[in-house]
Image 1 (cartoon, helix red, strand yellow):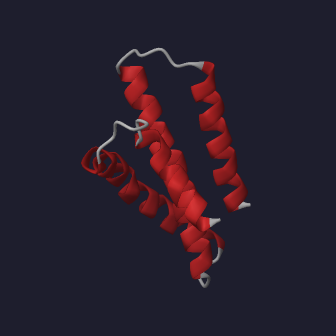
Image 2: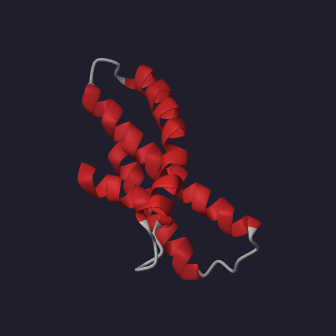
Length: 101
C-alpha cells in the first residue's frame, strides 16, 4: 500500500510517454519538503512513538501536495481542466485520506 501511495504522488508530474526523469524529479521534489514538515507536525500531534504513522502521514500529505501543485500550475496557465482530471484528483485525495484513517 505504501508503494502505491508513493506512485500516486508521481502521477501529476507524469505526462504519459513524454516525461523525462529530470522533469518528473523536479516536479515531485518541490512538494516533498512541505510534505515532510506538515507530516512531522501531524506526527507529533498523533503518535510520536510510531515511525509507521510518520511514513503514512508523509505519503498522504505528499500525494495531496503534488496534486495541489499540479492544479495550481494548470490554473496559472488558464488551461482547461476536464472533469476526468477532477475525478482523478479527488480519487487520489480519497486514497490519501484512507491512508490517514
